[in-house]
Length: 236
Ligand SMILES: [Zn+2]
Image (cartoon, rainbow, N blue to C red; front, side, top):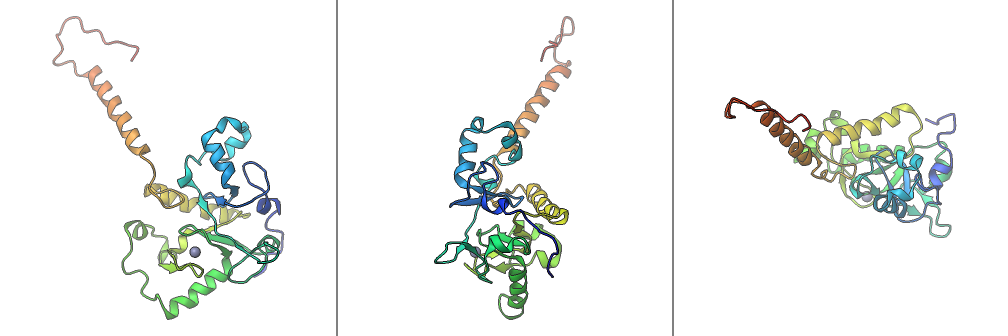
């Protein structure tokens, strides 16, 4: 299953998608699977004005650290190049012909094919009864049986569900859409990319709504207002 054309430009794997600086630890990723220096994202969150409009436009959906996941990248001991913990192949080199994913639950980055194969084998022997006691989010993540089944990270044994395998730097529309679909699903559940609950934006909205409702009411309940000279202020 080799892709015939170049999947990724090398830059995507070596430079921060926000600052353009060389990637260096700690490295984080958003739900789209882009790679960033955590430092740049933090700088952006604290002082967005330091970044140009086009840079800011790229990351408008990153509003807090819950919107990113810190990656755990395996290194080759001598060269320090990124390698897949399962195949031990050079990730940046292989990115032209292989897909790489990370597990949103723990951040481990690996070859998609290897993890998929591995979990298929794993299912047969242990952790077989994976779907037994799912969390509420998990049972709501109904993406078909296979993607909804509990698995374990082969590196750190953290539980994850396959829908949370995020493709890094997806280059074909189907994979871009897959990441987008996952995020939509999470948003519906009030969760962020890192699977932590979203902030109280909803409440804020509700508050706003109720206050506008009140406003509206105060403009419409003319019953208990003295009948004669009630002129509603127009400017509110
Ligand atoms: Zn892991």
